Image (cartoon, rainbow, N blue to C red; front, side, top):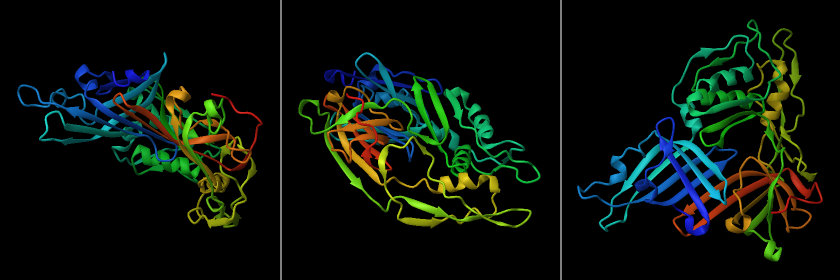
Length: 373
């Protein structure tokens, strides 16, 4: 299978609702796989196949139907004995490029994670006396056939009918994203194992054991090909605004709440230089004020790092939405970071690269050591 020459095995499952191992003619035709895991924009994939015609003059893997939209696709990779799932999603687009040269035609299938299945049907619904986290669990529960397990964080505001009835007038995905924004939360779906996915609704969390460290400038211990840091003091913003209390019409200022990103990762948080005004909070319930302020403060972090891993030296898959340590970059930029984005690219028998973006709220390592490779 693709990648065996590198000590890396690529696993591909395809199917309608329950994917099964892809046919041999499909896996043998793979020339390139790209998977992007992005904490901000969601996850996506693209697989390129090299095609040859059969005796009847047809492209065989097209006739089988395994790669037809909107089939479900699971992409896994094993570096060593234990496979990990990089992507569980659905095919949204198919592109065929015939060639006059034998064996040079290509088929490219593109798709995104399982959030796609939540974005197909607009609805008009109301949810009386239900807080957002229970509405979220109810919505995700309708997609059990895709192996979605809801993991909501309780929301502080419980609406009462006489004051407020939550209403949906868009797709489930857009409604969930709107609920997440008004609570200062994030929403994403990521695979736990083959066929099982976690649907997370809550604050952006950096808790947990950091992944093996990204190591630079340490001779034989180095495991990154490139690593560049930047510090943009204008990236983050503070927020101002107010809410009108519905009965007394009293103007209530939004509290100065930082983004819901815990725990902190830097000893010297960058001082916020810019301020924005929240203009859509005037008629909201006062109980939502802290969440609205926190959601508006979820702006990009000032310190970011971008680079590319030497995958074989690193020895594992770097996961987005998890902490990772950096060492060898000096006191200002060593320490733990949050992995915002990883782009996995595997080409047939040639390479497996992992391009990454990491971020945190300032400079200075919070802990004197990081987890080694």
